[in-house]
Image (tube, rainbow, N blue to C red; front, side):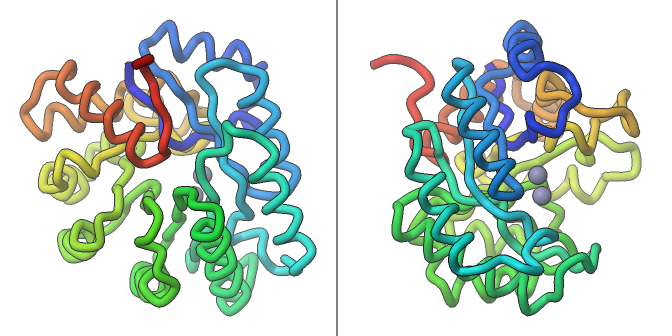
Length: 258
Ligand SMILES: [Zn+2]
Ligand SMILES: [Zn+2]
């Protein structure tokens, strides 16, 4: 199976149970569904409790942090503690591409998320859009490396990859890896250490080729994994076992009994 390390089941129009079944039939499981607001984190927990092979995260996306209060962070902690199937805090991070929330607010929220993850001993799912240096600075200052850190939809070059590897962070590749013009991303993906690789869909966003521009679904994590296996010149079966093992380590879950 190929695990989808990052999807938004609550943003996909179809019934989540059917979406997860279709993914499993296509060889994609588990699906980690990501919270982006308090409500969406509650939805994520609900889906994880309801469907086998679904895990949840609790977080407030940087774009939604303009009015994030201390009370809401407390509420987020309650949500994170409300189910064994909450495997990470996030997504959190910095997004300088969209200016929906001031940078200082985003930074404050990121720091709070890191502190929460460390307090609860849970992994961190990091969103970094055109904010590499500031994200890396804050993660270092807040000692994020004490818990597993997942750089979702990794978009950095060789230098950022090198720094992430030195710190032991996981790098998760998404649909853009399959785009025709993404030679640089594929070159970077080929260089990453095998034990730090993850794949994701970020569904309903970032559909891989040949579905670029269409709403995405978790089953397409397989297309990202296929591309990753190809650029690393390894069989897809080997890629599957690498991704399963990394998903277990990154999120602290057991995919197979024993
Ligand atoms: Zn994101
Ligand atoms: Zn996302």
